[in-house]
Amino acid sequence: MLDLKVLKSALEQLEEERRIPKEKILEAIELALAAAYKKDYGKRDQIVRANFNTDTGEMGFSQVKIVVDESTVRMPDENGEFEEVEEGVEDERVRFNPEKHILLEDAKKIKKDAKLDDELVFPLETKEDYGRIAAQTAKQVIIQKIREAERSSILGEFGGKEGEIVSGIVQKIERGNVFVDFNRAVGILPYEEQIPGEHHRRGERIKAYLYNVEETPRGVNLRLSRTHPKFLEKLFALEAPEVASGVVELKSIAREPGSRSKIAVMSKDDNIDPVGSCVGQKGIRVTTVMSELSGEKIDIIPWSADTATFVSNSLSPAKVLDISINEDEHKATIEVANDQLSLAIGKGGQNVRLAAKLTGWKIDIKGVGADEVVSSEEVLADKEAKTEEEAA
Image (tube, rainbow, N blue to C red; front, side, top):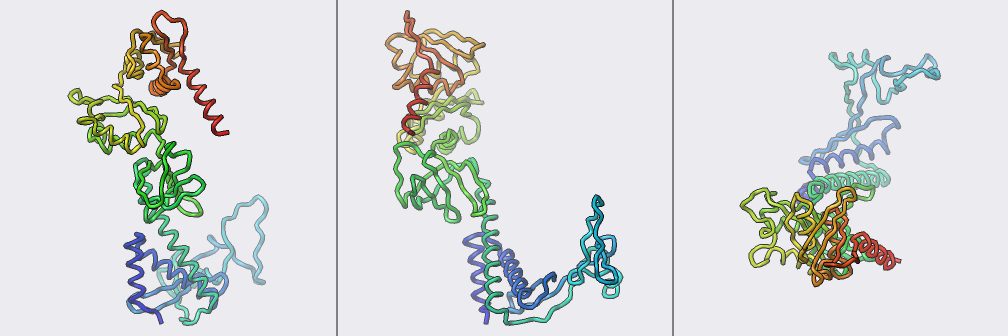
């Protein structure tokens, strides 16, 4: 016998823990009961519905017939045969089936105001023993419906968090990929989206940028990243209220995850210093962000609508003596003091490489009186070549 108290407790638990509405579960149970009844006692084309009363435990079954006429269905001839539709002739009408259709004239004998497409409900005899196969069918329908409801619930919850930072617990690490538990869902942090040099442990709490929420036949996939430029932006939004409110805007971001980043910031309020807002008092805000990124160095640069000023700023901490802009080639040629040359280029060309990414301009750097020029394009090409070698 069905224990109604246990059933109600289970429904409440599913609603509370998995956020699946009780109505969805009851709908699944009724669908399962209908499927079980039809399998053991119904006919092939019948439309069977079940009604389950959680207060009394009573079950009721009914057959549904749809009201039709010759304009909506094709009728059989005297021999019960259906006339074949001629080739090239469109006829969307389905064949009349007495198990699921009832003619309008017959429907009006039962219900005077019956009209086309109405549903007439006929009670069926209640059966208590559905058999082993039917019970298994019912179980499968319930499990499927619960999964569908849970998937919909997860999509509703995490779909609204796409493009935001999420926090979870490392569940397992498999083939370099980190699986993160969010209680009701599991996210994947692929190897290529992890900050180089970081090592995650099972059970530790981890923050990541949720860049994609996708529904698949196997469930909902949460795609995470710690290398995405937006991760850096969202971290600053957590630390700096001015960024969160939109008063201070991160106009451009260039990252080499785990090593160094450059961000260009501007303020929509002349009274607010965009660089100071991101740095924070005694550097607390930028230090907090750097700690989350495993010590990644961050250069915060004031953005400028003037190209020459912006490109010059982007090479910080190096000081620029002179700059010439070639609009046609979208290239800037920079001159720096000889003792500033290595600083402007950076270790392995990193500074000029990030500056070029940040501004979107090709940058050539040379010392005072020198003919030799270091090109950001060449530095970037060298970096890509090394990356390919390491991958191979």
